[in-house]
Length: 365
Image 1 (cartoon, helix red, strand yellow):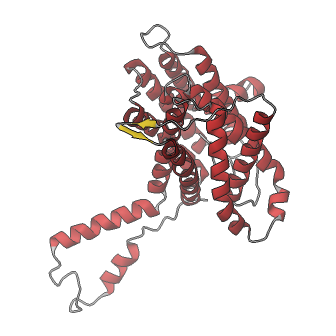
Image 2 (cartoon, rainbow, N blue to C red):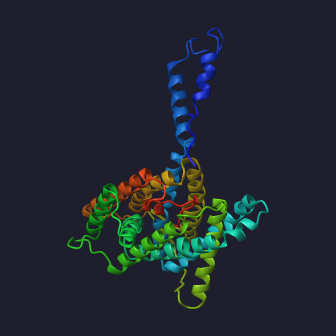
Image 3 (cartoon, rainbow, N blue to C red):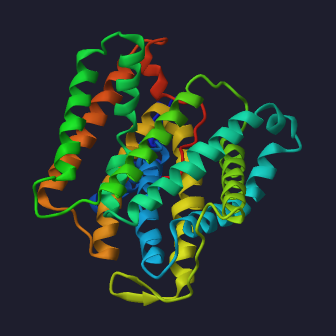
């Protein structure tokens, strides 16, 4: 699906051109320059949001809050498993309402796509989120998310190893650039020591993200994205609760106050932000953006989430990666951008298609 090509302000201009010069309100009747400029700015802003790009950036911005809200809870005694379980449970219950409305009684759509929902919930939601939060508990938010965003590079390396077919030059360049950025992010010889276990958690999250892209690359189902999101969150929450019940997953909550920037807030403020802003609002706006821009372009814009995550962590947690790590982050994102650009240029049926996914729904970052 592609974004509408007709500018939003075009019909207004057409009507103005057809209006007689003597008609009140005509542009020739001495419209005030200030009003004209204000109208142009309003039209540009409206076109920006209507194009889907503004919505996609907003979605990335609120998705980027998840690491900061989660870390604020982790620092008060919450375990990563508890934070993930609370997030998934709350978001699943809220999104169940619009999901049921979207189904309109067509429950067979859910039955026909049960495997997609189960895999999305287990890998794209529960595992990916748990590994990311474990990484956040040991690393800065920005570094943890950068490690997870190596998923497209892992896909390229896997396809290269399995097919023995060398990727195109632009994909190779992007892969090498990202791997070079990874070395700088780890900053092995620098003053900032990176937790090795945290790095493994971050890479595990990247592996889950890559597996999710492979799973959904060739899906062509009719399940509404909001239903997939709600169902996946519900499956992920059930998996987390069952794992905790068996004793395999440590689960500890805390009602201590959290610190967000200069403010000391009750625990439910950070949890509410994690559930409502960083999950429900982020998912809904992401689906809207994917519908307007198409899944490929929307996933390309979603790369800005790393930038937003670093900014939020700086403002709310006082975290900022070192200069070398920031440079490495730019190289990782730049490399993924090159891989994505090569994907957009790729003809159908090539290996790059594994980076695309039919459902306009991303895993939980």
